[in-house]
Each structure stands twice: as structure tokens, then as C-alpha cells.
Image (cartoon, rainbow, N blue to C red; front, side, top):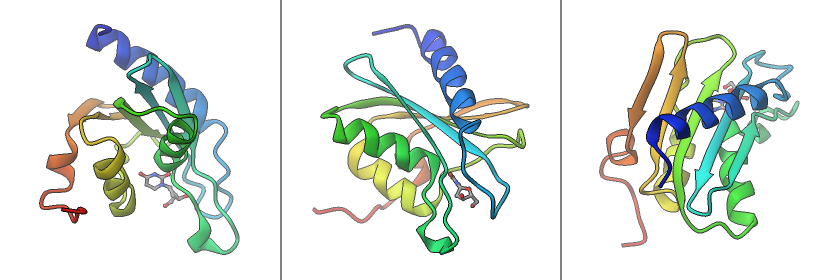
Length: 131
Ligand code: THU
């Protein structure tokens, strides 16, 4: 397993690159996400908005779906950051997605103040599951 600080650095750079690709003309809120899988691969995502606003897709959702659709089974860490420099906590729907498909992931939120680390159990206690 890579050292945690190296993982953070890699995901920080990748999510920062990703947020430059955000398509967010309606909110003006640009978000980037990056994740690391057990295979050592990095997948990125940015938010992609639509004039039918409910169709907008979150950055972390894009990254997770990309990893899953490429056959990745285990997500080890996820980083999320927004261009405004404040912490961007994942929305409820993304928390549910993380709970289902990245239950053991370390979740990092980056801001200009620093990096916070969470588990999905902290962000979504008593989650609804198939059990
Ligand atoms: N957004 C994300 O991409 N990730 C989050 O964790 C929170 C919100 C996006 C969705 C929408 O395009 C914009 O931020 C404003 O809500």
C-alpha cells in the first residue's frame, strides 16, 4: 500500500486538474474529484450540469462510475475539492453511492484551510442498505 501522504498528494493534483474540466454554467460551482483503486489506478471526475438542472451530475459520482465501469472493485481513497477553496462535502446521493460502492474508502475533503479525512460511516450513519 502506498504511503498515505503520497496518496493524498496524487489525489490532490488529480482532483485539481479535474475541476478545471467542470461543466457548471448554471451554478458556477466547479468541483473536482479523484479516487484511487486497489489496483493503483486513479480515476477523476468533475461536475457536469445540464439546463434540466436535476440531471446535473456530481464530480465524485462521475469518478466512481468511471472506476466501476472499468471493472474496478475496490476504491481505497477519494478526494473532493471545489474551485472556491472551501470544503465541499459530498451530497446525500453521493454519500449513498460511496456507502454502496466504496464502503472502506478514506474520504478526503480539500480546502485552502487544509484537508479533512472522513469515513462513510461518519458521513452517512445508519445508512439504508440491502441488508
Ligand atoms: N457538486 C458536486 O459535484 N459534488 C458535491 O459533492 C456537491 C455538489 C456539484 C453539483 C452541482 O453541479 C454543483 O456542485 C452545485 O450544486
